[in-house]
Image 1: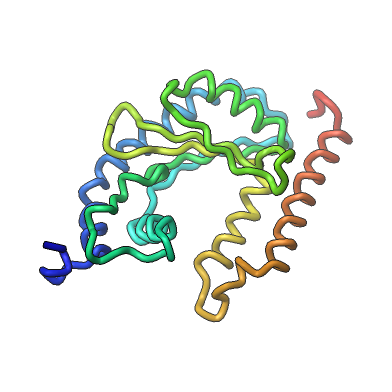
Image 2: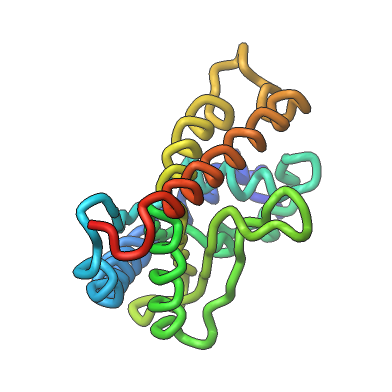
Length: 216
């Protein structure tokens, strides 16, 4: 008998699951942030005055998790007759830590340091570039923390200028008011987004070329 028979929707069931998982999510975030900060300490201590390395953690909110799972389904809808198909524990980023760095070469150093620490079971999942030959826009890894085998956590390593743009883009295009629905999928807007990200990358590369190695 489906949950709908008792007046409970798939969304109701998933919200209940979220709050059951919340203690594990919080423990995973706390562990992961502490481990990442410790691992990146040598990189942080070597920063020049103009360089930045920021570590931030976040617990995915209930409704954001629900929508992320919904977007994975065919037609972006849940089947109300088969609630057993859906679990928020299938998401890879209920707990997350993001490392942002400027300039771009510090991202590579952070990635090297973290890959030396991450357990072998963690899965790389980079954000691809616009063309097959492009380097990833960001680096990501997900897996289980020691404190919980119930939920996966995610580490992201993102160039700082890209991360700042994504914050604006996500707020404006992916959590919009109804009048902006469909803007993110507009081909012209996708082209402009690509141009912005390419321009930010070019800025960072030119900046690094001009200051040269060892500039303070």
